[in-house]
Length: 252
Length: 253
Image 1 (cartoon, rainbow over the protein chains, first blue to last red):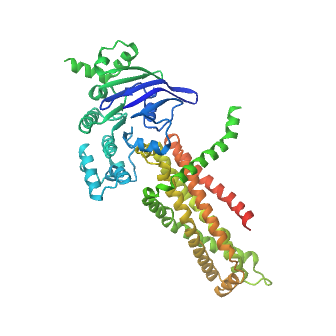
Image 2: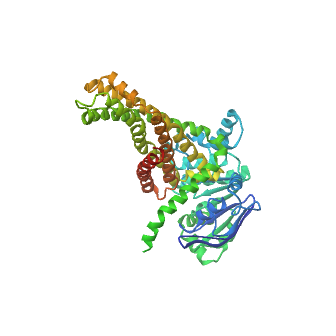
Image 3: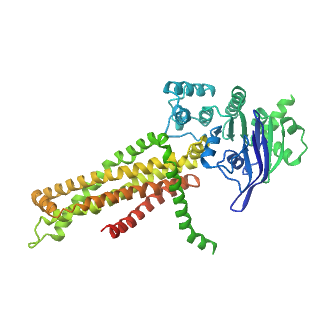
């Protein structure tokens, strides 16, 4: 379980997160939503220890990662897989080598086992034949799927998706959403999805955390989201055209 | 006022951050097993792939120094063999190391800063860290170690090719015979010269790679930021080569 307690972070005196608290339960898919620049990605970076809070604490399985040493933090991070916004694939390596990289680096498996495991990850993201291709030759959606294959290579307990559908067409977005949902079910991974795409939220999330004005404004289940009368949340959700479309098709 | 204070403080801030980066790099030396493969790659990129441009620069430096020395020194009362006595120490003590350093500031320094800068702005460095890898150890240690190991090799190559260029220029222009050139070089040969040059190469190798890694690793602000880091890496490497060259001359000579 991941627990964020009273986290506060400011950049150049400008508060980005103020007194943010949140619990992420084992096996669930939590969507962190909010406007662009609301601090969602900053919260995500705190959860994997890429940023240190000005005050407050982040617990991963009971360990306060804001106060442990760097070498201990690296061990905690190995329980996470992260899908960055642009994929963050290593452009000096082929798609296959990108996925195999964590296996080569952190396991003592034989070359044959690594090859098999890597191919299995590429199969899981429905890209069995792109191994030899360089990241620069892949489309945006394919890059994200290869990055997802890399993120699950070590079978992490937690996986964090940073804007997984941003910049993608609706069809590719749906493919990514299905993958996120499918992987969470198949691999029993706890998923944290940072996004402002309500279509994606409705398709994959069990619970939603809404950040507004640097504070955790609202946390609840998808069902609660529909019935909530919170005006700020309602305005955010309504402003998303995908939500309107999804709600309409849901009603029909 | 705030801007003035910031500009005054910035060099100290940079020096502090540079020192911390090096300390973190030293702290990750124990994980060399993980970085070994990357180090071999960097030794090829920094060392072997630089040989053609270093050879070209060294050969022309040697040739030009020979012709100019002949023009400036040789007269009825100064024998031509003095050309060998001047050119060879100039190459081994100064030119081979400094010219190699300047060329590699552009070729190696800019490449390192651009690579790391691009990795920073495209979140590849964050991806390494998120996996639980020490990005400083994985990216910086192999590059700096390769620089320290390969620059002396390039220096030796530059010395040999520089002397060959000198001999070729002497032969083609006829300012001095090969025999007289070698005689002059041997009569005034100082054992310390090549050692002095090797120490310089070692220091320049460290400076160019570590400064460029620092500039690239802390890149901010997209493509423009990468461009800025790349330029700064090349310029600062050249500046610190000059400063170190002077400091080493004062300390060691």
